[in-house]
Length: 308
Image 1 (cartoon, helix red, strand yellow):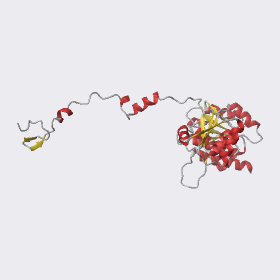
Image 2 (cartoon, helix red, strand yellow; image 1 turned 90 degrees about the vertical axis):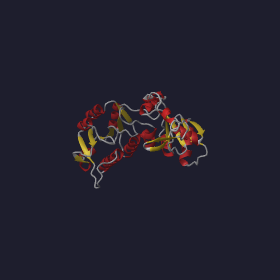
Image 3 (spheres, helix red, strand yellow; image 1 turned 60 degrees about the vertical axis):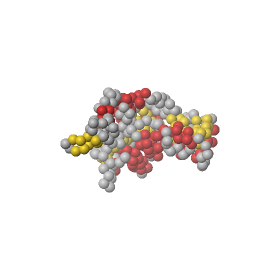
Image 4 (cartoon, rainbow, N blue to C red; image 1 turned 90 degrees about the horizontal axis):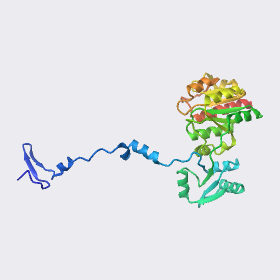
């Protein structure tokens, strides 16, 4: 009977005119697809990604780091950074930095291992390694009291750098590099919510992290008060600082320069702990500077005033 045929394309006549049937597929569509899967079982769902991350093996906290790049590796070996292995990619173009790294590693008895470039890519997570990587143990931090004692015994006026919530290891590395360049005696980093000395920080510092003591403190406010008790003036960098860097008279004396986080700057408690907040005068329309740039500018100005 017309209209009841199960054949695909059968025509049913109605008041609206002739229509083409579904060939029985309409009944199949009504069967449903069963119960909705749990969020953890649905591919691409945030809950599924979190569940996968929980099951993924974590890197041990004390696992060695890989320092990559020809300059950082050569600098680290010159500074006699503790190392366990030097990896060289097969077939790379050698230069004086690679040759020096191989020579220094051999002199210190560090294992020299040749690996394929693909294997080195895998080991370094795709970082720009330039065909060379140095395996270093976890960074050894100095105790704050030892850092203060070392600064006090120095022939030059003590200058420290404290970081408040700087979470980018590349900014940490750049600040460490500026601290070494402008004569600082040490760097303070919080143990929580702050970047530590990882391979990324090593690389950005070009190995200079081995040339300056770095103290990791549990409570930065308490650490700054300990610095004040030791006779150091604490100056915090802030876009709304009460004093211009040009007018920082305390630059000639023992000082701690506090650098705030990349986004919000110093926290309220740290700002209240500082003896003074300092702004960097700028001629252009920029509202603020990157944390590493601001630290470099402030340290350079303090070093200039001390020289003069």
